[in-house]
Image (tube, rainbow over all chains, first blue to last red; front, side, top):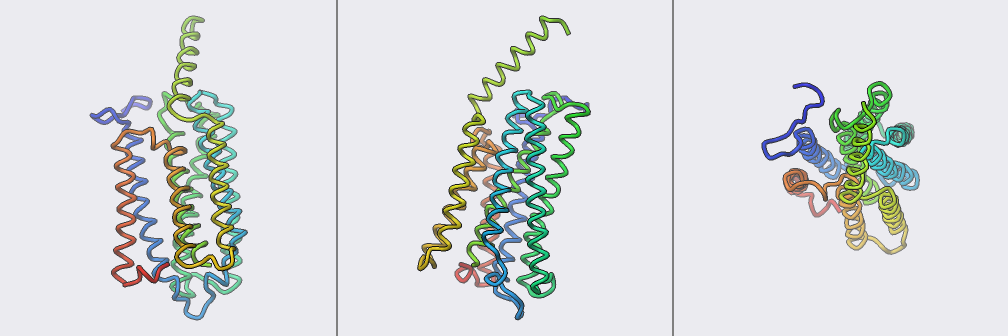
Length: 194
Length: 116
């Protein structure tokens, strides 16, 4: 099928958007499994450091705030795209990617600190489940940053008009999803454990 | 492109932008929603520092505030509120699946009530 041709279901729904919502629903279950595993193993520290000793809530709160604000910049980028304002859209897309990178930097710093304090991937079931959960989330953020950067490059090279499909909208859905998963992780993994 | 067709495109763009403004929210509303989310996050953090406020009340408060943030982002930033039933069904079905998985895993290991 040629690019730019509408992809719709027999009911008139946009196929790519429908597929994205289905993908996000499956991702919810993926993260649900990881969060359940973390809660199951959070007390099994094998004598290593536990959440109370390690977690720095003020630091993680700043990271959470950064990711929350990236959802704002993303929705503003989406809004600008809907209004065919390419310049504003690029600005907000770049801001979102920048905030995503700040969040990733914070996570890298946090992981480095934890490893320095004796929490390695194989230290305990608590450590493994914590790194798997937050690491997978970080990987999702990194993929999101990559997608946002691609959008910015494409907007300069070919433009992101409505005929090219709903790329910005799909990336926005993915990015907001990454944010809502962090809302759950921040509450369940960080705030409830200290 | 002729002047006339450019004018038509501009008019259509303006119309669709107005329509979107009516269907979705505008930048001002998005900033206000972000402010609301920031305030809820600040409240979440603050209540964990209140001496004596722990156990079930703390857990319940944190879960309620987390759910409020989650649903606000889904409804307004992801625009699910404005999407057709099918997309709402798909997403919330996935969410229910995740919750069911969570309960099943923790019940299997008899850890549900020790979790919080």
